[in-house]
Image (cartoon, rainbow, N blue to C red):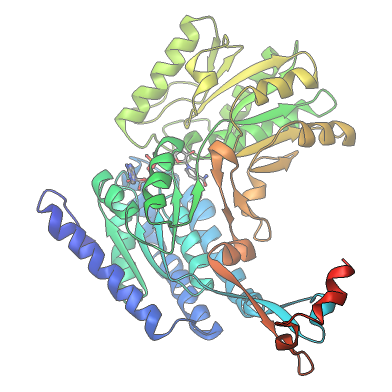
Length: 469
Ligand code: NAD
């Protein structure tokens, strides 16, 4: 494991990072394209990390969060990584196959195809909220694409990051995959390195800096960012069902989920009933907020930030309902009914167990509310009516959508996951991840009867072609 402290010496830290990159670049030069078996073997080692070291990983995340529900770490991180690994292992050979393309009539009988090849060395910068999933899931896709990988996990989950670094060092040679731990300074240096691709998952504001730094090297980026993901509930849909789905999507991991519903739009006149039903649903699922089931807030700074935005919304007229008293380090699930326009809770990403509910007069009004903000990462719509579903899908853009549920589009191995505009660019997961981290190389092979030289000067034979297009 590399514990890099910038204070020791700026030069030695950057030299160490540069050395790893050079080693990985040299490995790429020695064997540029890894076989399907080599990739499957690397992915199997990622799966071993989450299956053979499950308890240690769960405990590390638990300590980093002050408290993290065991089931949440198992279900939302370890299981998703393990199943993504299985999916990639079963399909990678097929994904690697060259894909035949048609050729222009004038080029017949030549042949053309696209072959997906490794990009080289990929950098991954990951956040703290699902520290295992958001590091190891892109790693699987990067390995499926045959790349070498350097990872910079979050400093806000130091135990998990240190354990991941140790396990990756156990299962991988440094020239295949390496983890560098450290804070913002290391991240800042990392983002200036000449990777062949840089995947960043984190906030929109840091994402902008990463894109600027990567642009200096013309390093292409995939940016998985945040934003305000809306849920629209229509009056034709069962309120109870919508409440259950939204409560799960919002309060899992205490709202510290990038695709958690950030606010709910409900038909005018139903806000109070919806807010009360949400609180009742939370109390039914988590009767004791001190229990193992309910996750804590990652640190004091985030807890204070959340308390401040609730206080401001309440002071300016929003009606606040909570699901009881939370113990130290946790925050009670909180619903804010009709906060006034312009308050932070309606403008900034919440990223905690606080859910504003806003009433709309008709669907156009709800869509206007969404479109007044930057493009969200996720969009949820609850309706049985096909034309309303269509109206919402065509009326507002988002990275992904779940209809009549929350979060579930993210767990589909066959759907790309990513944002749009301020919520990100580029998507990964499954085959889309394989393609994202590959170079789609075009190959044209001239047929035995073609002779392009015949088309060269003095161009006599071209005359016929040029008069016919
Ligand atoms: P963050 O942007 O503060 O940090 C993310 C990573 O970037 C960390 O590893 C951090 O050390 C590093 N970093 C910080 N400053 C840096 C700099 N100047 N240069 C280079 N690296 C730097 O985000 P966070 O607080 O860890 O995570 C929460 C945010 O991430 C939320 O906005 C959330 O919506 C978003 N998120 C998005 C997704 C997604 O898939 N789209 C998933 C999870 C979280």
